[in-house]
Length: 236
Image (tube, rainbow, N blue to C red; front, side, top):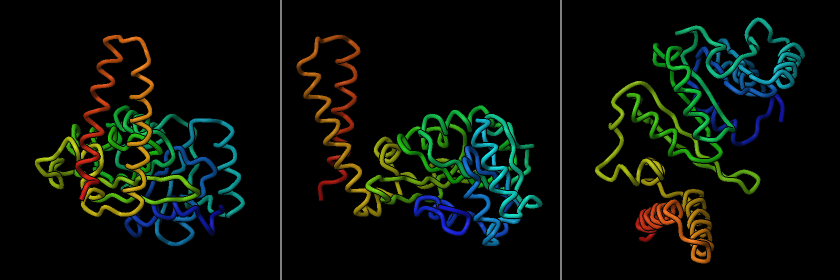
């Protein structure tokens, strides 16, 4: 992977960046995504944010080597604190857990006052992001799911707006599975949720042999409820 060719996952993230955007890539690692987006003329300016010194220095070197220092700024800081309010009109956060992405958005709410497009790619728990968007008046405008190197990735795209706009009366299911993805039912979607079902059923089998506690009974009930919801969606 380099600034000329991204992974399929990151290329898909970039495909949702509006043309000529000013972007911020949070947790940018080697700054491949912002360099690629600027190099291809998709973004006019980019901030690469990194909280860890090592990746921050790698990103700086990458930007210098690509001769993009006038258009890509690498900044050291936690989450959205690397931004000034309203500085960018599109924010990408890719390759973290959904709960962590939601916590980054929550902590940096003051940086989101201009309503930038959010393109979020969680490795797990996309439902945490959908729930945050719902609770904070963001409208889910699109979703994607893809497989790369035997891993399945969801992408969630949102803009400021009516948080219920693309949901139906099956909101609990849709927050878990994604309303757009549920509607499309792609092969990647089916594969992901069949894998989840297999995993949850295995956990329940192990629970049967464990000592019963209130926490275990509650967890088992939650898993059974999730299994029922997913099976209802996957069963034609």
